[in-house]
Length: 320
Ligand code: SP5
Ligand code: ZN
Image (tube, rainbow, N blue to C red; front, side, top):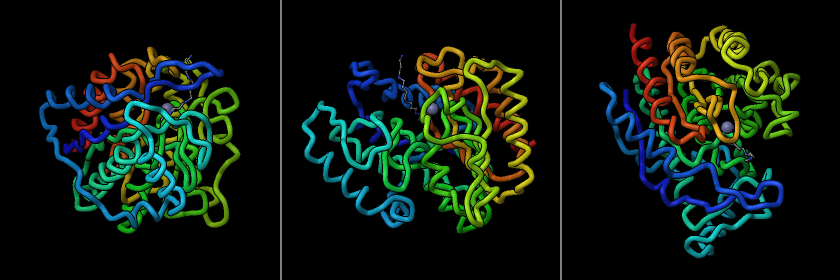
């Protein structure tokens, strides 16, 4: 399995998050991806490569020119080691900008696109270690630690080569991804996440949101309870997976969040690393070349283990 990594993500390092009016430590830290990279380096059969630079037009197919310019121009004016909470093009107050945010976020798109390109060329399993994450970013906004939608960029790239399914197993609903494909029938979006009436992103992720126009039926939301544990989670996960299998996609993109883990500091379905191993096995059984795109997961001490277990099980089952 090829894993794609670039150290530009280190340039995005906000100091605080505003929560309930107070400054708290920012949970989406550079160590998340460093830990995952270091762990996967030890795994037999994983080979690391760097992304390359893809044309901006692939970004503009999803995000407006106004939004992209706003991010680029605004971050240029931020002093080193300062955080700016923008007041334009936002979904919420969970997307602080630093001087390096645009560069890091743009490279995360390249990281996802490089993975998509490899999968389009015939690789059966690739892992894009994207940071910052992407699934809360929409056409015209940032939010929830996300700026550009990496998984959506990969799915949109792959849609030029065949039918694409996106399976989002981050704890949070991927409102940005949902929005970007809401009218389309060539990209299926299926998400398993915590109840949005009680959890971020609050605005979207309800089961009645099923797509629009020819996209009707190509958006499927599955809700599980916070801290629900293995049995209820897996029951719902299997329903979601059967939608993916029915669609019979040429390519599968997984928005891979580990924030369902039991010790996650901001989320959690009370899942163990064994649960992530079995989730990986079931996803590997989907008969489509698969791109893993990193989303959330904030228990830094566990991320190395979770990524290792997940990729090992994916690799073992993908080719057997
Ligand atoms: C990609 C991803 O997983 N984004 C998640 C964004 C969730 N942001 C809002 C969470 C607010 C909770 N903040 C910490 C509360 C500490 N008690
Ligand atoms: Zn999340």
